[in-house]
Length: 165
Image (tube, rainbow, N blue to C red):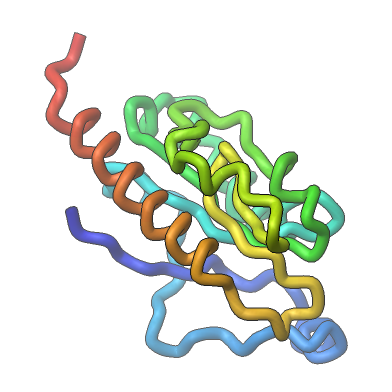
């Protein structure tokens, strides 16, 4: 499988972005537009959670993909999520009700139950705990993310190669 990295369009005014000390946009990563989802075999969305919900920019992006969901253009295409959060317990509740979500469940094994360190991630997907933005992902969080990508790719390949019913 080939992965392509995109960023969603920014919806906040520059002054607000300055006040919240937002990270700069990545010049070498193109913006995605909703209709491009139809071209993919599957997609994993990554986002920060804010106050137990996804960022408003992602909500706007998803709201603008309504025609793809209602026309069932994306049926059979797997989707997954990963995130960063300020509150550890956000990672249990950051989810989506969209079709074809590929959660990890408890397939990551015993490390899903690690309690000796603060970590992000849950059965819904990989994640990192980032209270003030200065904390870097731990080795365990990186292992979880790598596993998540491999697991998702396996499911996406199976769905792409199945014969239609």
